[in-house]
Length: 138
Length: 137
Length: 142
Image (cartoon, chains in turn yellow, cyan, purple):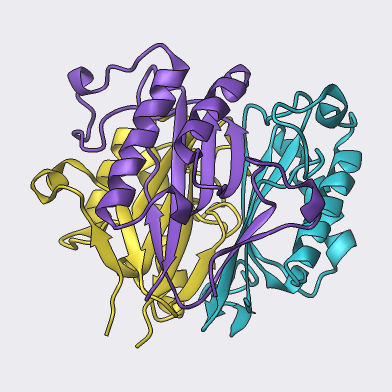
């Protein structure tokens, strides 16, 4: 059965990238399009505010998206592309390190586009993750 | 094929993930904004001109969206996801309300909303990046 | 069914006018690609300064990015004719026309244009990067 495939143009250099140059999706796959973090009320702490700490925000965003993926029988190995929208590009390294920790030992990396934006939906939000997932079917 | 509101697994947060099961074609739309769909490259002054207010811009933009969906033989219920680009995030709710007024409340695609510096035409305040799903051929 | 351009006003379709939409059949294989700036495809993360020296000239930045995608497309047995969605992110919208000229060079001779979106944004992954492009490509499975 065809699977989602992580495409590296140069395997010997794969270690450099926390994302995939390309993800190949076989015909007839199903898709799950997730709303961004702010739509899903992610990133907030229990009082409803956004934590100041970018690592904390990142973890909460990832946790929320994980719930949605799992509710649909998917996980991060099904994520094919993410947009990372940051309000402060200096946060990029911490965001990537946090995502790397979150993925753990998984060898899967989605395709990724990183963009510095002016603002996100809610004051205090510093990181928005736009996720597309897919599942290969038979 | 089907396009449905996905289970979010998070209480009280419905309608914010969309599942497309197949086999289904996907439709990638060029950026939808208040400018005419068809324009010279670069745009003429007339084509680049947009009204000042967000409501008027949203109407022009939604006219364009309706036109492209129609040409694709799709309806609003086929729109799977939208990235909503705004030059002022405070205008998000106005644009979302304009979308609901135009297309109703029975369906919502997945949305990601961000504030950006600007769009191609000077004065343009809103742009949609749309993926739709439906039969092809 | 081939990947098709959708035109709501077909009589107005010019030579490189990007179409309002592209339809891709369920029988097609998709390739979602990471965004690229004018830094080489493979570079360390976190970034190392020496690898992230970007040309001043926006046309040169565009050429390097499109050359990177050329490499990824070719590696996957694809060409520019297989690009279905093309997103451009610019830090300075005044450079839009120059960027469009370079994009046209890469699509020249294909008779094809993908669905296309352009947005003016704040910042990209490396200082000096003034544009980023990301690409979705598709081809029939047969």
